[in-house]
Image (cartoon, rainbow, N blue to C red):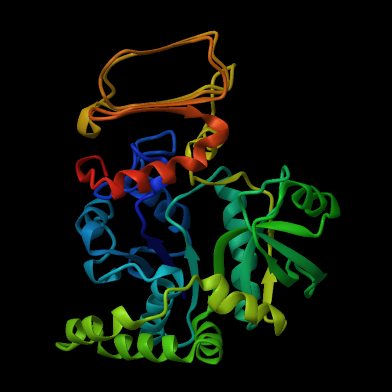
Length: 368
């Protein structure tokens, strides 16, 4: 039986002012349809993981909204973390709870803020990853790079494994400088790290115990108390003390050094919607590569108009209901919200988080 785990956390500061603390990006319809990123992620894995074997890990502030968007997923499958402790705690909690239910289960972890372009190919790759994981390897899906991207981590691949598409992962590489990214792409041995992982829960928990024994002990104690009268008390006592660390650093890099990690190369279109630039890349634009997202105030039907004249490669997001007009601009981001207007060069889209940090320092909470 296959279990899908979807970590849905963070506030998406690089998508401010569209994404806010109370309405983070994974709850927003950024797929070019009415689906939120979270709903699209659940739909994507649905052929392999039904509602009963789908888990979402999210914060207390978003649990109600998550349940509302996913009415088919059982309430007990929405795992609420009291505070953000990074991806290893979130994914590890789900793995420990699944292991209590099904010790031999294969699970996959899928971020709630990705856009995938080819559903059929995605399922083919996932099927190969599941088959590889059943043999005891931990699988990191690797996206075949289309250009030298400096915003993603990379996987360095080695020899093929068996007769299928899987290859050994030699090591994980951090986000490179541009010149190094060019060498990675030209070598043909490197893939983007999509942060999509598949493994048997016993293999993952075994590596977690070896590399992060304190984190493993805390998560398994929480899982043992789950669905008991002591659940909340144990969670409140242990969770704040858990190490804040990503699953890549905590488990996957060390497992790769032991030869336990494989990758299944994926050639479907994939985007990590981390900022407005990548949002523009993820969606289909007009003949001038402009992307427009319109929503009425409070998420209602589209209101207001967008007129683009002599405009190219520009991302316009509007929820204000006002008329938005651009003239003679290129490579620009325009975000028009009811309470805030944001304009920046598309090349500087990742710097939005610095604006958010400045607003936090000014305690401008109504805008966060």
